[in-house]
Structures are given as structure tokens and as C-alpha cells.
Length: 197
Image 1 (cartoon, one colour):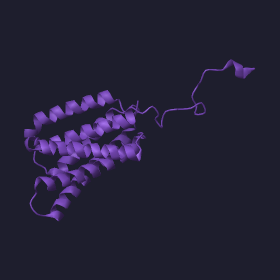
Image 2 (spheres, rainbow, N blue to C red):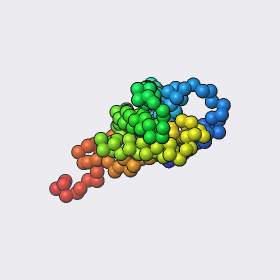
Image 3 (cartoon, rainbow, N blue to C red):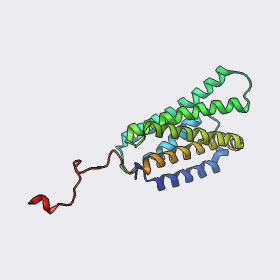
């Protein structure tokens, strides 16, 4: 079950990716950090509007703002690392810097989701999600698709890897911390007639 209506969430991501792909030529060049901040806010927005339990408006907006900030921070760390490393940006160096940014962003975002919305994400689950986001980012890099769409395809592949990881580890889990799971947790169970005697 999980914290999200996952079918709606994936449907919104597909629509959002299609709209962004169709309008990318009209997008102003605002820099990689700001662009990834916008992409982070968009994914966080799709997450908030597809939650099973609607948060208060202020809490949802706070989550979106923090997610956007984390996205910009992870991008800024990657850009800063590229200046620190120096030299020409070959494929191996680009892959390592994208992996760093993707991994840091995924770990921070998954932890934020767990903190804000009580998602069933253990440390091994978060590590698996981080690995999935890194692999998705590298797949776009190696395929060369990023050359046609810039950071859009990196972000979109990351969105789907993150959401797929959430679905696997939170959405398909039988137990959820916000749901009752036993007889002493406030659930109503059938009355056993033998107990009355």
C-alpha cells in the first residue's frame, strides 16, 4: 500500500516528463544548479499531490522547498567537485561527478521522505534507492541521450528510479508504520465467543 497512490504518481511523472520534453526549447538557460532545483521541486510536488494521507498545506510546501534545496545542493556539490578536480571533463570524470551528485541527492531525498511522511524505508532500502538513482543517471550518460536534452533526461531518469525504489520498498511493503498491525494497536477484531464464557 505505502504512502503514495503509486499509479497516479507514475502517471503524473510521465505527463510532466512529456510536457518538459515538448517545451524544453523555450526554457531559459538559468544554470544547472537552478534547473535541477526546479526539477527537484517538480518531483516533490508530484509526490505531495499523490500522498494517501494529505499533509497540511504548510507541511507540503515546506517539503517541496526542502527537496528543491537538496536538489540544488547536490548539484552544487557536483559542480564544486568538478572545479576542485580540474582538468578536462572526460566520460569517466563526468560519470563519477554525476554519480556523486545523484547519490547524495537520492540519499538526502529518501531520508526526507522517510522523515516527513513515515515511509517504510530502512537504511538498506535507502542504499538500494541510491544505487538505482546512480545507475539510472549513468545509463542516460552512457546512452548519450543527455546530449539532446541536457539535464532533463538525467532528472527524468532519476525521478523514475527514485519513485520505483519508493514503490518497491514502501509501496509494496505489507507493514506500514502508520497502519495498525496487531490486536493491541487499536484495531477492531471479531469477537471470539469462547472469550465471553
